[in-house]
Image 1 (cartoon, rainbow, N blue to C red):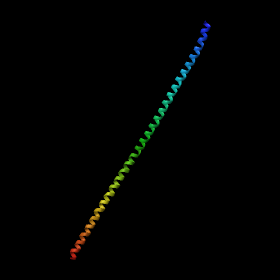
Image 2 (image 1 turned 120 degrees about the horizontal axis):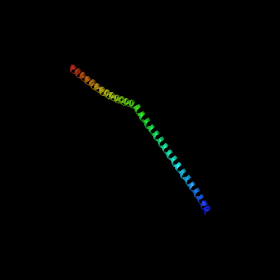
Image 3 (image 1 turned 60 degrees about the horizontal axis):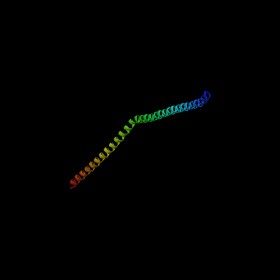
Image 4 (image 1 turned 90 degrees about the vertical axis):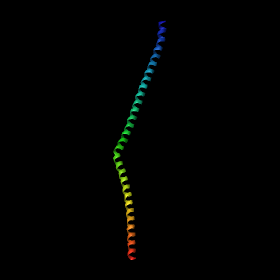
Length: 110
């Protein structure tokens, strides 16, 4: 009976060893996949963080220039508007002066 039980135990040991190997392989693969996912997450996070940093740097670098451009455009519009108003007043003044001279001439001509 000892021989029979040894023979039955041997297949159990083989099956147990295979199960243990399969379990260990699954654990190793799980750990590898977890590392790969973690690495991928870190890479994407770094890439996106870098993109945001680049965008922030671009905005920071250009903010002063954009502000100056906006101020220059506003100043230009103001100056053009002021010039148009000034020209309008000058035209009205010149027309009024001509009308006064015409009226004075009519009075003198009598």
